[in-house]
Image 1: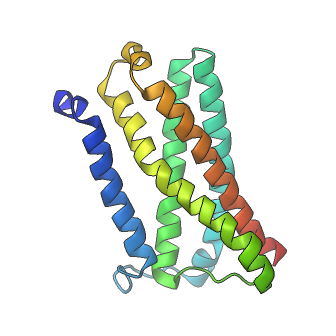
Image 2: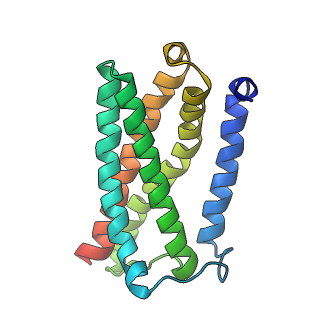
Length: 185
């Protein structure tokens, strides 16, 4: 099975990305409405704060993982990137659960801030998150289907640098979106 996957990494990354994005857009567009058990209001209200903390921690783990590989600490890099992926999945599950039940949160601030600050920041955040999904699957599949010593000869280092940069930027912009929605306004 590993050999088959190894020979089809781009196709598998594309397939997994399509399924993942279908789930994300399905949740945002209400496809799962009425199918999920409803958590108490206090839990639903806590999800944005939990997600901003998860995002901040993910930025730290991605940056630390990047630093680890630059220093040749492959095992530490792998561990930190695995933690980063788990944090991303945690963020996404919590976000999609909340948005499936409550819909997207409205922006409570003034219209001018909404149009010229919040909406562009949110659009870039979401766009980067969408772009990151296939990149993350690609580098993850390369890492899982090849020996560590062979990864440097693949696109893993190059695509990984791009994915990590975009991933951290997306998480950072998500924090800005949270601050605008829940702290400033």
